[in-house]
Length: 64
Image (tube, rainbow, N blue to C red; front, side):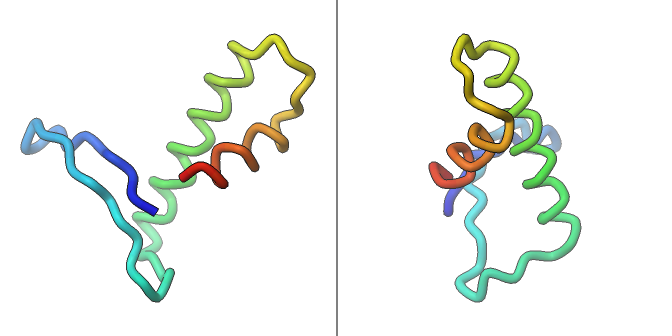
């Protein structure tokens, strides 16, 4: 799973890749969950379909 994130300190984009073990530090895990929820809200508000938030969340996470 690689996600492109913006680092405001360096003012550059960086690729975030989870370690092979799948264990993330709690701070990274919280940030990743916040990003997923923000994307979920944006897509849910813009969607004209009957998808539930849970369906959209599943789609977002499976496409990471």
